Length: 449
Image (cartoon, rainbow, N blue to C red):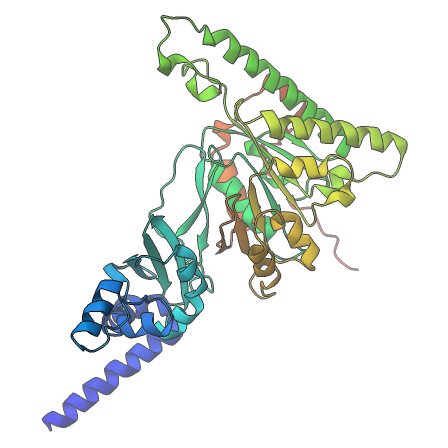
């Protein structure tokens, strides 16, 4: 009877583990998976490193001693495992490399390590000279995105999505002032845009929007916007107004510098962040939805308007960071076919994100000058994963991310809740949305006779 109870208990435990692995992979990992994966790494580490060609030959001194004294040939030296750290989504391994190895050896072996250890994903990055960190993901965290309850928000630093290694991807405007987000129709580009605006709505920042699709994407969020243009003509005027604001801010910075021998180093500044609190202008985040609608033209008048808009936008991208003006551009394509000045503008956009695209040339517009591997990864995004994207950096690093679904209602609610934070910018007074605060009643529907 005792043996039967033990067998039944084991069967129930195994069944529960399989059920959790199928229906709730995050719960399975926290209860069973993390223990099994840690034991597997501990017991199979040396053999896996050897099988993945991540070992080095013994030193000449040991080989010489073995030859002199007719000893057994020393084995390959295994990289030293410094520590294993379990996380909410996987494991992190800190490894000390052997002489002769470099971080690229581990980056090239991540697929082999993934199969050998039986985990979903492995990424490698160099921590410092001689030390690498392997981030192992126990399950597909991008299949069902669940953002952590605690995130590290800050001034102009907001959580946007979840990375493939389980960490949070942040949009830090002070570190990456301008960005471009590409994606085909239905790829989740608008969801990412809503998430960004939803997070920025709660901060002391002025939101300015350009939506040349008659405002269908940004007009519902108008209560939190200090300026909004819904057609190309108004967009060109709004961009020139922002340029005028930028020039005025530079005059303030120049006036307050007053550099002399008695001025301390802490008081010398070349941007708004070094100004006194009472003089510091409010930061501005400019969101442009579908850049092609702003750049295309068919008549001579539209061509002049387009040149005004592009020149102003290039000036904002080149000089706006110090004045606290940041640019987020969204579109399906962003190449030279949009006309003069586009490639010059793209060179100023440090942040690069690409959702699912329809062709390889579209992903090259984002990552062609960053990493060929990121170009290939952007073309491999599946159609049934809206919101999934590839993020590239100017250093050549890239990663896959996926933003949690943010509905239009959630974004509108956030903007309405923080509508009192909307600053009045004198330069953009004529572009301030006229919002009717009265409740909107549904139109009467005539009954059929």
